[in-house]
Image 1 (cartoon, rainbow, N blue to C red):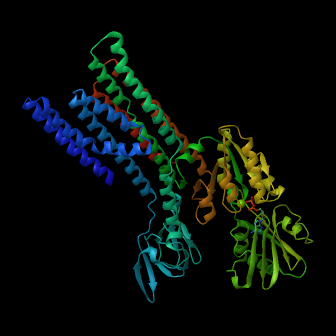
Image 2: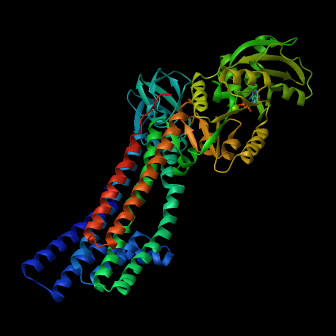
Image 3: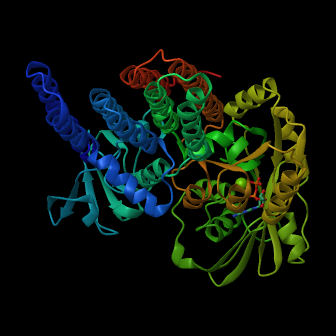
Length: 622
Ligand code: ADP
Ligand code: MG
């Protein structure tokens, strides 16, 4: 139980005890007058002291028009007109409601934390010939750690010896274990399943994947959604309105048909209690937390409830091509040197020049090169987004990139004759040949495209690659709207145009891998980044992160967002409907103060249950 919940429970316990004593003593002893008032006042004070205190603090901040105020006026009023028992009972139930609220919120937060329980507890540090157990926070870059079967990987590291498999589930939702061997990257928060591995620390604990993701999720809990703001605004108008209705109830009828004035005052107070919107206020954040939790369980991180809400309004999905719609794992088809160089020399020059780049093209060239790139041979590396790279390799200036790069550098080159992506290489200002590479479309992207089409949502593809490749990929995926040969800044400009053309209330999402497209991710109404593992820029810039490179996960994420909003709307309609009925019944004298608050609790429980199931939103196929 949280500290707040414990405090509330004590308050309720003490108040309940005093209430029972007051009831027993006054009924058995037939107590009336001053002694009776004092006994009930004690119980009332125990139950409401903190509420009064909080309200006083709120007055200082000028934000006191809320359900607390309704309860204070109602119960204080009831007490004043001699309805002592009712006033105490109403306060008692109100506090129980607050307790339920507190518990359900903290339960939801806890279960989200449990889904993504990726915080490592310890690490086995290798010192000399032995191992020492240390807290992961103490690990330093370059130290060697030992990972035993079943242990959680404490920090991001690279395997130096041993082979094994790693369970990625907690991080990515991926149930298939991943094989690792010497040179493989290990992410903190995943679990070493079998085999003893030794690995070199490449990130300190705080910069490691697990810590970063935990921070992300915790922040998501803090950020409030527009719907919640709506609820806040709503109480701001709602509370004065209710007070006005109650006031008129007290004033008007006695003026018109002269009935007992006391009775109308009591009814006015009951209206205040009946109108209390407590259940609604808690069910909204609960539903959002539930949606975020369900998504997290499925390997999708959502940075806050407002993102879920926006996602329901997206009608256009814009995709980056390389690495997003395609695997981004290029296979080298051809190495075509121009005059003196051998194939191996050409590939080596390109791989070395690309030795620091994270671009899929670069990764694939290094892969094809097959050996670790000797970074001491490379200096002055300049990555030129949308063009390629420039670097000094063995003291010679190497350019590796696309046609555009060659043209810009005024290098006379021969265009590759076959279709496909080519990396052109120039050494010391002279054309040295090209490497033809090919990428494959993700099967999974096809599923997503079919789904988008069925839902009448538009898909647009942007790419820095050439027209031909872009057309081929778009044909295969059935995308009609394609823009090719874009520089990163062109993508930004295009997206700005798209956004201007959007209709009011319709939003645009951009899906990319965070490489060369982080500005676009940040600019879109919703930025969706794939492969949260590794790409820091994507983690920062995106609103939604697909931990595994599977664009089709967007489908279930959209479903979750719709279900969340539906649940919020249901709760609003139900709660407000019930309030209207209760207020009317109170006006005609059909409910007592206790019954009004019990009805409110029932509404709250139904709302909370309706929100709770968002936590269990199932993973569904395409
Ligand atoms: P996409 O929009 O398809 O993701 P990018 O904007 O990342 O593409 O890159 C556009 C083009 O620029 C690539 O198709 C490639 O030809 C070239 N390019 C970018 N970075 C590199 C690199 N590091 N090495 C070689 N070529 C590159
Ligand atoms: Mg890209």
